[in-house]
Length: 359
Image (cartoon, rainbow, N blue to C red; front, top):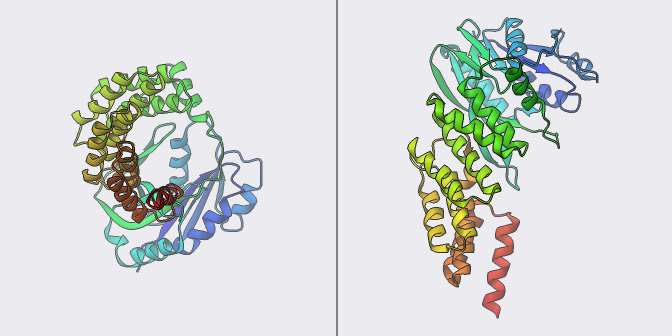
């Protein structure tokens, strides 16, 4: 007998996207749990078209509390969680059904890819993996008021299935920042993970000096997740770039090499720094290095696919063009175009080189 899946969601004012999400996944799950944290629109009425298991939970500025409550209502063998603006594309829904029938019962925790950014043709360019399916009887707990994470025991497997993020929001709000600052005002000590995400929120809101202070504090704990440490170095470099501090930007980027082998996005940022300084040969070195960096798709970190080919190829095109080396420039633009044939930039560059050839 196939394992059963309970979909557990927390929602609030999601009438624009909830039906799309539930329609995409309803054929894959055996139970749908909806926990509403205070909707004032038609969210609950939409949910009622898919399930009668709708619960109210008073919002207390704590995503983990709400997610734990949703998990506690489930009765299936496995717990699946989604946000309202997520969907399973048809191919991924079919893949989940096959996995459920053939493999799921032998797994404790299943990691699924999370696609969050896309190119002109809708192909994913930015993704990371998250625990999406957890055996209900396995010890587990959501932790963190915001940017929450589920802790668990058991063995972890990766499945070739993706959740696709399709946000309709146009403004990045300050809710997460407010929650962190309330924690601090209440005397709570932020964990290393919370320090990282607090620093990132400060950066997103343009508070660059505060972001640097918090990110440096996070790195100083020596207890951060490796991928978060590398991302913290990137964020520090962005803050210092905003201040016009080239040397500080370079130091932050190079500090990431203390944690692991160079990452493509770090190399691209170093290339961009030297390109802005018109030091094109040095920029070429770093953009070339980006194309040689090994991919670590299952490292637990964020993966920007464009940084491993499309972006450095385009920038190599620009660098060689500014050095007057047109043949090399056109070559790298062709490589960029092979990765993203519909890219307006690559198409524009192709026309540019064609006009030079005609002249």
